[in-house]
Length: 293
Ligand SMILES: [Ca+2]
Ligand SMILES: [Ca+2]
View (cartoon, rainbow, N blue to C red):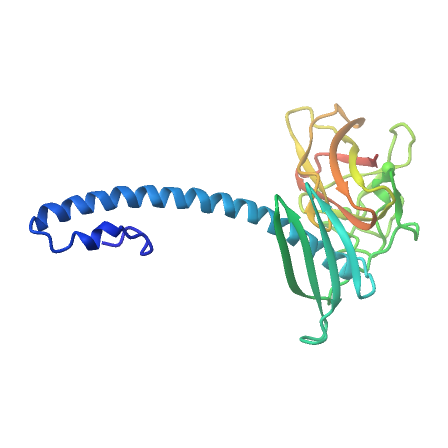
């Protein structure tokens, strides 16, 4: 019977072998071992779970540092070697990115080290450096945060690079008429334009420069003309992925009736490429602008 880990042994089991009342004692021993085994197994599982949880958290944070280093090098085109640090939750991780020519050409070696809850973590990863981000800021200069970003001022670089849109036509016919993002005239306070006809899986990127590292309050100026309970959702990503979490948009009473929805996004200082990503809702909402303060 092998229902217990092979490492669990009871010291009395050997001592009691060969006893006259073999059958009775064996039965007793079996019952005892089962009890002890269950206790030991449960205790080990709890301890392992706690250790795994703590170490897993630290490793995840170190991994985030690695991803950050990779992004700084590849997406943000930092020259090598790159060294930096990344604050993540309660931990801070040093990141070093160097050429990995010693092993494989066209790859970078990233080492992330830090501590969390007393655990020292060092993570080394080799990643390909073959896909740098080629989009550029709409005005030619990264948008400096804190600031208001107009939705229609997404980066230059075209479909699949600076944005993704389901069709190549600008269905609103305004502002950037040769591109696929759908832009129309906006009658919200301040005028200008808004992005509309937004479908799940569509996205826009914005190259920003963060001068003050902090958790920014994100306020998106949105509208939704559906009268019912239709709800669309989107989120904003940085190099570490979905950072704001899902932001829902419900009816505002009209396609040019505007309201604010808010979230938060922690950003380290330096250059970032933010991506506004539509999760759900076929043309359910418009976006005029998004503020980061
Ligand atoms: Ca379109
Ligand atoms: Ca706008």
